Length: 329
DNA sequence: AGCCTACCTGGGTC
DNA sequence: AGACCCAGGTAGG
Image (cartoon, rainbow, N blue to C red; front, top):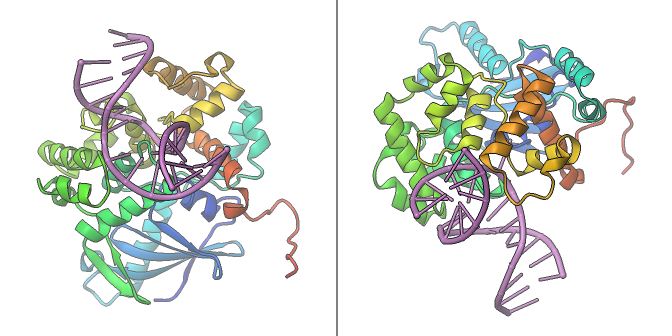
């Protein structure tokens, strides 16, 4: 399949900050070609940005995504809708940035450099199990664990240029009792039990359909439902609410966000060893009061800024604030 | 309710 | 080299 394009400039969407900012762990960046490869919706995608377009290409997909008729245009339209939904392209990000800048000086000061950070609309199952893996862990190891889940239990989608791609496993697969010991073997540590147990609980609650009911609930209710699962606490529950259940006011408070809050907004919280439940609520409420009903999205922009302070050269976004200058080689 | 602490693993630091 | 520390936390006390 060839490249398709969607009109979308870099201030509306910055791929590196969005795909490599700790939201999803399934995207890889080919720096030479400046192309991204990733999997969602049981489909393998390549993405790139050329001028004011987001371009996408389908590398492979499962039959259930394919229409039986020969009308390829219908299928093309479906893929396009899938991309638009994943990046929430119906939302005008420049307007949101402007709004958040007006409400907060810190946001204003870093939003020029960290433009185009979008909250992905992820699939709840992948999101949930990825973030169980994330607890007390490094991004590099989280990524490799998510990959292991897929190769071990996911359905094969296709092979391309010598690489085989797998969909994220279903809840049923992860609920099998032997999963825990297998994952232990694969180096998941204590998360192995959380994964199997949560999966079994979700199956009990109705499987993938259960997530729809969570999306229809109010944020706080969805959050407390999620926290009934073994291995899901306040932080991961908020990640799921924010990233895959459309509760954009959810605001995961982790070590980074705590640091940001203590340094810039709530000085009395400085120097604490760990974030207590009380502090968690205080920090979340502070940002919700500051930014409003999409506080979680705004906070993600700050989170990206904080992440990148530590690995400046690796993942720097292209500077679009100035006319383009090519580096001499 | 609020505060410990143990927990798997791997990469970094000194 | 080897002992520490830390990483997008959580359960159980």
